[in-house]
Image 1 (tube, rainbow, N blue to C red):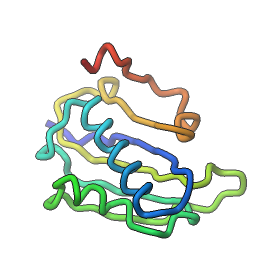
Image 2 (cartoon, helix red, strand yellow; image 1 turned 30 degrees about the horizontal axis):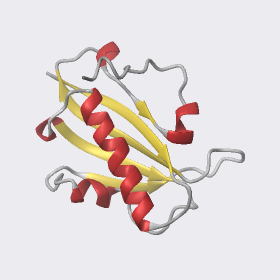
Image 3 (cartoon, rainbow, N blue to C red; image 1 turned 120 degrees about the vertical axis):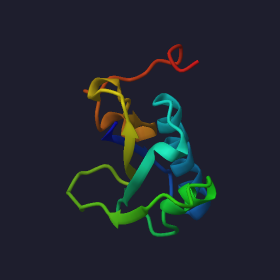
Image 4 (tube, rainbow, N blue to C red; image 1 turned 180 degrees about the vertical axis):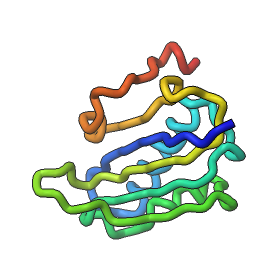
Length: 127
């Protein structure tokens, strides 16, 4: 078994706690689903948010999902001119036997344009 990184990102329409927690939950649940993970496989998660997100720590969504023993960290994303606003990014470190090309990274809403080069898992594959 080895440690692999899984990336994800999602955008919100505005900076409010309810929307941030809902969006973070959505992308985290989708990463777990697409990669057939269980909570015990998650070694840690790093969350970043753009400077325009200030209402709540995105990591709180993971706690509300029951990830109470998983180490979590939040940080502010680097402010690069022209970068995607109102964006939450995640990097999950997971223990898995999967090869690098078997990992699915999840980019939702406007964040989908961040990594168009990565393969997407179709709806048919996740059923």
